[in-house]
Image (cartoon, rainbow, N blue to C red; front, side, top):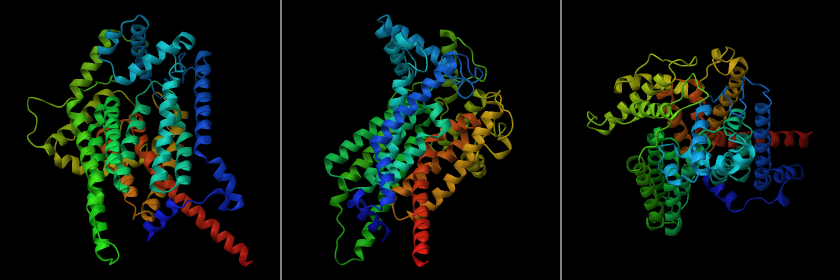
Length: 491
């Protein structure tokens, strides 16, 4: 029944004229175009402020002269240095050398920004703002589309607004990092899965959606090749839920004498889902790996070619799949992959002061199963309260306090997301967002022992919970508003 009501609301959304007078202004303010323009201006103001602070050495322990937030993203120093080298190749016409350089794809995009806007602003965060703003706005649009597709337009608008002003997320999207590109690509891939799940698309629409999802899978892979398993897992969850949806609908319609279940209507979406799974697996097997630069807890202001090559080789040795003695079956390879990734994070953040369970090693299936409850706690609740008031090696006490405030907000979001899951349990899209977020958060808890790295990698899965929490908050607010109205009427 809930599903039928939701479908009716989507097909006949209330217009502003039908809304109560005190709600019309909310509808006007939450118009997507107005929110998008406001978000663009807001992001530009934040980036300009950071650049000014850096240039005049205000908060010099937080931002350097190039606008790099050294307190929260110190790896931006060497990433900027590599982007500058690539931009120099572009400005000197060395296109072939730039194209064949073994540099992460996202840094090549930043080098284009430096070559274009660096003439005016120099190789600073302000020159990278066009690309950062593009991904920032793309993320907000995708959040809105997911909220609207699964629930309604207002949920999408409010969820996008919450994501837009999330402090640490906003700060990270102003830096020279891969996170905005990864989050945008992952959200677009999830949206493709939601469309195939929740709609009976025509053949043309299903193919276009699948092709778009394949391109987004490639974008995710180019931004973070260590997230291949999460990408494939997301597609697998979508496929499983699609099969469950078909059988539930067949069973429901079998009990109804008015309608008869037709497989033909679902064939395009079914084919699209199979192709989406194939593409998500294919990009992790066919496309060459773009090695990412290993982050160091002791960043340097300059990074020579030898340093870049050594960092790239270290990351390749730590993360790449073993070739000579690879396990025979897929499950054993997955377990070995988990242990290898965890080992990589242990070495990469060996001197960090915010590591959790650094001595834990996951070498076999038993180790992984035993650690799953702890991994779930880390994925959902880290940093834990005991870390909120301590002084970090990089972010200091103020940074830890900010992370504590955000974590408290995340706890509330997770609680509301549970309410949203229960209230929308008949909607397949709700289960998709919940299962993908759960898979991602637990996976991060298994392999990522550093809280700072976990913080950055967790944004995509927290965003999915924000969408569910927004629907729960809307229901609670409307219930409270109706109760207040009834009490006022009775008195």
